[in-house]
Length: 123
Image (cartoon, rainbow, N blue to C red; front, side, top):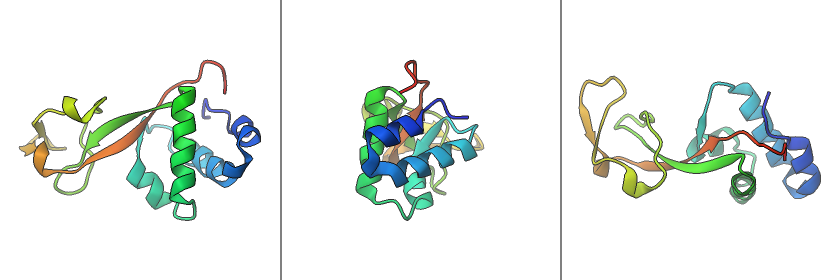
């Protein structure tokens, strides 16, 4: 179960009702996921307008339920291990998923992701 109270969020931000339902369902369906890439959310929530998704994620970040981090994709479009607070903290080289070679991060995509945090106030 998600520590985020989506019913409360729906009552406070009713315009985002469908977005809250999508995010609540997505998080419940992926209990082991600790950070969510924006690309994946947009792909999985095709019916959710991008502006609504961005607004909802911004609200969750402002409440402390999530925080924005950056992740690096390898040449096969898979996310590599590690989350970075800023683009500047990403090392110039990282091991690939199988730790068989190193990837030059200047040649790959750096994507925003959202790290799930626990809410203290049940917002």
